[in-house]
Image (tube, rainbow over all chains, first blue to last red; front, side, top):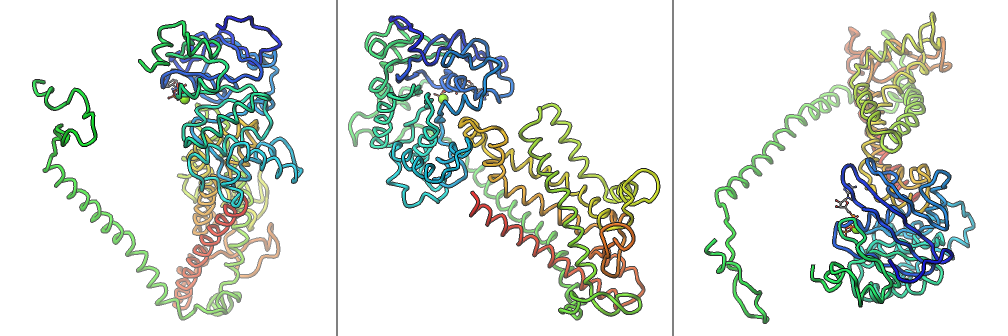
Length: 258
Length: 319
Ligand SMILES: Nc1ncnc2c1ncn2[C@@H]1O[C@H](COP(=O)(O)OP(=O)(O)OP(=O)(O)O)[C@@H](O)[C@H]1O
Ligand SMILES: [Mg+2]
C-alpha cells in the first residue's frame, strides 16, 4: 500500500477485500487498493492475470457474466456500488469505459459519440453536435473524420475506432475513466495524443488504465499497481513503484525479466 | 535430440545478412497434399451434383408451369374475379391475390411483434436453463404439421359453438392461425440473429449507462435486422404456400370478402385456388392453376425483393 495517509476526502474509488470468481476459478484474490481523485493509475501485469476482470468489477460489467461471483466492496464516492440501492445505469454514466478491443456500435461515426447523450435523454441538437465535435477533438480524431461523420464507424481503421471509443466514453462527462489498453492499436503520434489527453484530463477525471507498455505507464501515472495471477502484488505511487519496487516480482516485471 | 544443437541455433544471427536458410525441418507429407486436393475436387463435384439434383426439378416445374399456364398470364388474369362455369373457367384470380394480402397482413400483425419479442427474450433476457426448454418448445412448434394448426385454429377461432372466438370461416380466423405458424419461425431467426451479434456491442452500450432495453432497441435490433427480416420472409413464404390450416378456418371465397369475420369474411387464396382448381375435372382450370402458380412464385419473389429493399434502406438510413 501507499505509504502516505489515506485521506477519505481524496479517495474516489476504494476497493476492499475484493474477490472475484468465475465458476471454480478464483480470478481476483483479496484485492485492496484505492484510487485518488484526479489521479492517473496504471495497472500492470502479465497477460491473463486479471487486469481486465478487475477493471470490469469497477463498473459492474460482470453483472451479466453467467457464473460470476464477487465478494468484498467497491466504494465509489462513499457508496458501495454492490450495495442494494445502487442505480447501475447512473453509476455507469459516471464511469466511462474504453474496452480492450475497439467496439464501436454499428452506427455512424457521429451517432457513436452521440449515443451516450441520447440514451440519457439529451435532445438538444446543437448541444449534441457541439459535444460530439469536442469529444472527437479531444480524442484526436476530428480532423480525420470531420468530412465523413455520417459514414459507418466500421469504415474506420482499428486505431481510429479505438479513438472513436475514447471519444464515446468521455461524451457523457463521467468522473471516472476506465481504459483497457487504450493505445494498443495506435501509432506513436496518436498514442501521444491520447497520453496527452490523459494527463490533461486528470484535472477532471479519475483515470484507471490497464497498460502493457511500462514506459508509457511510467510517463503518465501517479499510481501504479502490479497484478499477478489475480493477486495485487504491489500498489504504490509511481515514483516508488517504478524506481524502488518493494517486491522482487514487481521489479522483475518492470525490468522485463519475467 | 542429438541433432538439436545443429537445428536450433543458440543465438539468432546478430548482423543483417548473417546466417543462412532456416535449418529446421518441416516434414512435408506429399501423399497427404495429393489427397487433400483430391478431396477438395470431390467436394466441388458433390456440390455441383447436389445443385443439379436439387435445382433441376425446380426449373423443370417453373418451365412446365410457364409452358402450360403462360397463355393465361395477362393483366386480366390478375385483375378480375373468377366467373363462368365451373367457376374460374372465365375471369382471373383477383379474389386469391386480394385474399393473400388480407391473410399475410393479419398473420404478420400478429406474428412479427410476438416473434421478435420472444426471440429477443430468449437471447437477451431469460435465464439459461428455462430458455433451453423454451427454445426446444419453439423448435417443436416449427415441426407441428400445418393440418394440426388448422384443426386448432378451427376450434379456437372458427367454430360457432363451445368456447372460442366464433369468428367463423374468415380471413381473421385464417390469418391468425397462419400467424401462429409464423411466430416460432420468426422467434428462431431473431434469436439466432441476436446471438450472432458480438457481445461487445451490448457491453459497449451497457457500459455507457444504457438500460437493457435501450441497448436492445438502439443497437441490437438494428444489428440483427438482417436476420429478423429473413425470419419474417421465411415465415411469410411458409404460410403463403399453406392450404391445410385454411381448410378449417377460412376455406375459400370466389368473390371479394365483405368483412374479416363471420359470413362473407372468408377470402380467396392462391394456394387454395391451385389446390381446388387441380381437383376440378376441367382442363381450363388445370391450366389456370399452373398460371396461378407462376403468379404465386412472382408474389414470393416480389416479397423477397421488397423485404431486402426495406432491410437495405433501414440499414442505410436509420443506423
Ligand atoms: N468470460 C470468461 N470466461 C472464462 N474465463 C474468463 C472469462 N473472462 C476472463 N477469464 C479468465 O480470467 C483470467 C483473467 O482474464 P483477464 O481478461 O482479466 O486478463 P488480463 O489481465 O486482462 O489479460 P490481457 O493482458 O491479456 O488482457 C484469464 O485466465 C481468463 O482465462
Ligand atoms: Mg485484458
